[in-house]
Length: 391
Image (cartoon, rainbow, N blue to C red; front, side, top):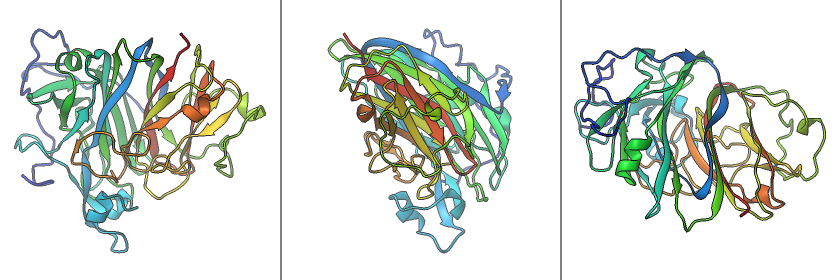
């Protein structure tokens, strides 16, 4: 069945498979009543998982909705936008992506989890989110539930196990939910994972439709370098930030120890990792999940300040430093794993991994990441870091 052709009203979830013996409380029989998880309009970023181990992070990710037809005739056609042309979701009537050929789901997408051979999963968390109000309004009661299928398997009902970030305003009705899926990923491992029934709305509006999912997995592998792993999550809107750089300077700055480096941390926009022991010229990477970032609309940024005082703008060839939330799913500026569908411009969903090496040239005892944006309506929900640790 083609994209957008299935029913789009509120759906009754059913369990298409079970995980007996895995000890997962998040998999429920279809007849079990499920209360909606608690919600908050703003959730400060806090630690979800941290470890020092031989290994790293991998992730699988995809968006759940894409363009169908233009509502603005002055923009590129949908086919060109899916290949990466600059355009924003509000330029289009948006429809669900649905790859599973299952009449009981109205959206479903896949992405490959590339676990190294012999790796042992130590933690796995699934994040999902979207806009509930576009041409239609989706019920927030369904925010905390999705269907997940392992590679070659059947759907399991996965429920949010923590508070859901849900903010109604800024012309959108935005949310992010998440669940610990460690036993599931530990059992079934790498390959193409499918996530369906994301609670996202189709249609067109000034805010535009958007939504997607990201599976973040920490693993241990004895022959890999010793690394510090840190996963943070929350849900915060970006907008006018009085502490942001007024000129968006692209150059790295060393020894910048003015007021900008000693101001109190903003729990909504700043994540600080302490207790690190990264050697000089250490390697590292940082992953970010963001919502409603538009390709070609500049103003959003991510900077990292190391304990040495060196501040570095995060970005790469595909994600400019002043348009870092630009609707891409990339590792170091390139597509790194299989996705179905595999669109370059994901029209409001970002899940990118960036190189931290330039920020670690002098080593680091701490790293402070700071999000900034000039325009309201963008959200960030996940940040994960792996960095070399001194042996």
